[in-house]
Amino acid sequence: MLLLNCSRKLASLEKLLLKNFPESLKERIDDLDSYTNSYYMFTQDMKGLHEILENTDSVDWTQVLQIQGLQSGLDEVIRSTAATKKVKVETAKRLLYVKEESLIRCLNSEHHATFEKPVQPAKITVCKSGLQHVFQFSSLSPSYAELVNAGWGFGQTEKSLRYIQRCLRLLPSACLLDAAGNPSAVGLMDQSAELRMGYTLPEYRRMGLFMHLLWAFEDSLAQPDLPFYLHMAEGNKLVKGSTEKAGYRYANCGWYQWNCQPLRSVL
Image (cartoon, rainbow, N blue to C red; front, side, top):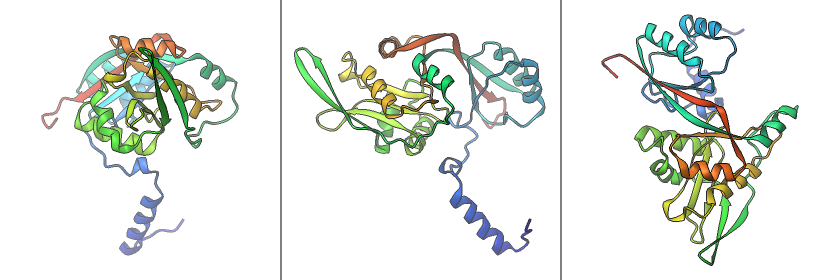
């Protein structure tokens, strides 16, 4: 190991490290951004999880953050720890949908998923009121971040806009372009590889476009051990119907989200 005591050499090393860090690690940390400050928890040892949350720095309880998971038993552990850490917690239950075929492929696979496969162009023809409408499948340009944010039920804030911009730059996305080249349905992945931030623009609804978008998105990322799943608000009947028609199945374990906020005056 080489110890550097020279300030000039240390500065050069910092520049070199920053240059080689993944882009997702170069983002400026915002203690109030719960979209970025996200944790996903799955365990069979609730007692052990309580010990980890209570006595380690695995979670930064000084930040506004969110925790997601599919086990209702996490609620007691999270709330108990949050009370000790003087953190306010709000719990929301969502609907979790999974693509059964992708789970089977995942369980039978010996490979590791990557995001290197390019999006494959595909044209989709939909009939409505006796007229044919042709849509082109494509990735979603970062310039449409505001459009995605405006229609995303869990967004519509400045922080969610910045989050969407990062996801569009770094993660797979998809859209269906109309004849004029404008998005009619959109969707993209988040850092957990979940299909998120997806919806159809109002003027294109009830045409089955979101179902076609899901199919095309899956085909563009078809890899043996990449599961496809998404969650939604319980009252979102439009997305629920399209998702079920696309072959996704409701997981009765549910999906839970804990929104945590430190009880500090600065927040």
